[in-house]
Image (cartoon, rainbow, N blue to C red; front, side, top):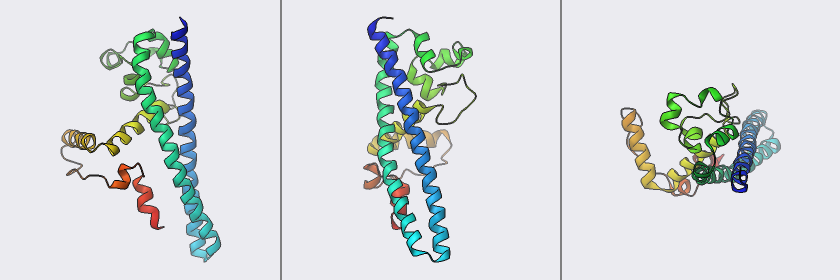
Length: 201
């Protein structure tokens, strides 16, 4: 491979590593919130105001961290989207399939022939990143999760995209999701609905 190809391959590997790290810390922070919520509830039941107050503060701190972590996940998803086009143009297909740890048995399947024409499709549509392992968790598919977060962020910040995705999904599922309801200004700013609802805790 030439220097440009090696650089692109290195960037893809580095991005996967970063995605896995941010997905892991995001999960650990969510686990901490659950643990602190249990502590808060036990403290309330026992009438321990000091522990309850500490637990509430820690929950709030973790929720604020999640907003920061979410921005990293979104940026990785956006970056991978841009990188995918360049990789597709300049890298041999075998090189980026190997870098994404796609099981060789998947390389020439019918679904791969139909939809696997770019790294982005292989990761976010076919979800074959790290398919060489049996694990199907978020940490095994970190780029797929980052792409999903980037899409969700785009839906939050663009009412047109949000409505279009809602209507297409609603049509596919026979109206299951009901009438479209726009997001609040805080949600459009990227504040998770769970944090808005929980702000009074």
